[in-house]
Length: 288
Figure 1 (cartoon, one colour):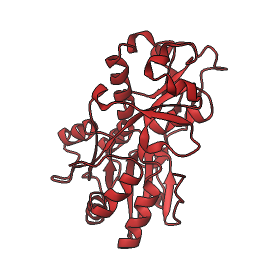
Figure 2 (cartoon, one colour; figure 1 turned 90 degrees about the horizontal axis):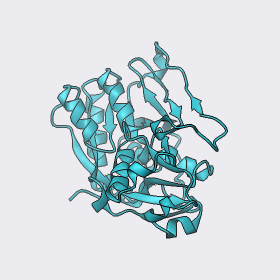
Figure 3 (cartoon, helix red, strand yellow; figure 1 turned 30 degrees about the vertical axis):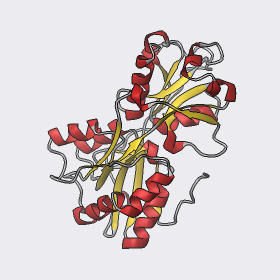
Figure 4 (cartoon, helix red, strand yellow; figure 1 turned 90 degrees about the vertical axis):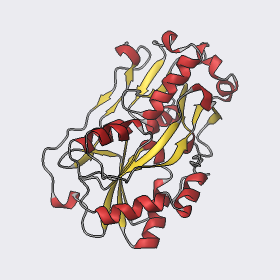
């Protein structure tokens, strides 16, 4: 499976929506427990300033909706949004980021029309805060974790090989706000490794960044979403779902949406037969 072609009707922004404007998200590489970067050249912190005001051009207009999507959907979203456009004529602006960071922006009142979260925990939080339209939440897929590396021998050794000297750095998404990072931490706790890996773990800002770290050889291995695996991306092996809480990918429509009728159409598309078939192609597991 290669990268799907992005349709001309889709505006791609690897961003997080602030209360007033869609702006680039924070990109940060950090060691668990703030340990020194050691063999990294230095602690890498790239922060793109958050703007306080918006321009009208940044806001969705008539016939256009803003979808905040978890980073594990990066490869699936172009096909989903193209298919939705073909069916409805509506354009989609897709904003990708970690589920927790996107949820925090929705909680602050960001004008998101549809939230495609990577788990239900942050959706639960928004519901408790009365930030969601009643009756709009639904589990649209289940995520799968993989252990990946550019080195086939590392993958063949399995999770137990993380203890070896071959794996100097292991990337996971930040468990504080990224569902796949939380699940990765649960996996490492289940196999009795979490407490012993302080010096090896590199926290990525979101699930997609864990894969990028492997691709650029900034780390030796990562625990990442199966949905982001493609031919030529390296080697990977699935991780048993018995080692972590199910990754219930959940959607909802925020009360702050300015296009609720259109948002409901997109949410219905994601859970429709056509939308679900697309998700299967990107290796998501469908809800029963």
